[in-house]
Amino acid sequence: MALFLSTYVNKLDKKARVSVPSSFRAVVTGQNFTGIIAYPSFVSKCIEATDISRIEKLSESIDALDPFSEERDAFATSILANCVQLAFDGEGRVTLPEDLIKLAGIKDKVVFVGKGTTFEIWNPEDYEKYALKAKEMARQQRAKLVLNKGRGKE
Image (cartoon, rainbow, N blue to C red; front, side):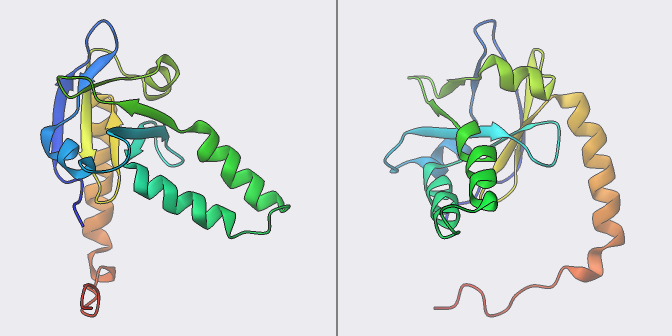
């Protein structure tokens, strides 16, 4: 399984286009949608993004809930209804929707932050502040991170 890894800074042009890092584009190559799926983060002031297969898995998890439950409706509304399919252009760029740009406080530059099966798109200044807090929390909680030795063996 390919993962979104590392951190990259790219410019946002006047038409709201940004070049998606080539290593991130490589993760989504060969899927039935050549692009990314973006949506507002539940956790931070940023845009989350992933490939179509992860959204399909989320949709299946939502479908597994009672079809008439409030939880199912809340997840479908909060996740699926806010997803935007962003296709790559010939230069590997996507056009970010104005509402997501505003939500993330993005101006002329964006930071792509790889987080494994997902990645985030941030305003660089906001990400720098968040990263400092996250690194300190990770340092303090480092004993809780234990490698799952059985994972990946099939």
